[in-house]
Image 1 (tube, rainbow, N blue to C red):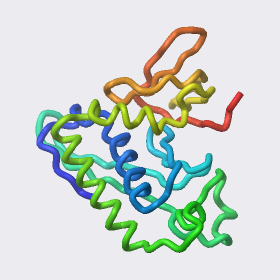
Image 2: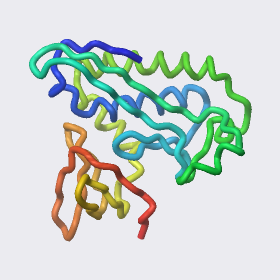
Image 3: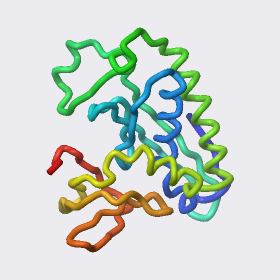
Image 4: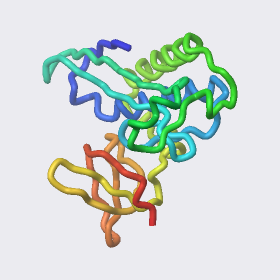
Length: 187
């Protein structure tokens, strides 16, 4: 989905998270229950990756910007292609235990993405924060956060109003605006 925001990129903090919520809404609308979100850009079902999100942004710091939201959704994954995947995964048809129409899923995704983009445009990420908290798979769990030069570990304690991950380590809370979370380090 391509979307033009009149505000600059600094106002789009948390947009990836809001996009993830839109994907879960679309999947729920299609009958799939139990999908959750792994900060910052993955949709999981029963601990297995179902979808990934990537946003690309262009524009000026102080002016309008253009965002392209790309979503990779496993709908019907042939088993012979799974050999090269290095993490647990699932497809929609397996999760639903029935065939799924790619066209209907694409329509639902677009519908929910448009709603979420409009909602984000008018209210920003705080409008999504409560829903994220209900879908947050890292909350209360020991996680590893891969940063460019190090890996930090801690207990997931949600996200702040900007969408930054909050980790607790030895009773101290620290926000991380970027990184990649691994839930595989469950203790």
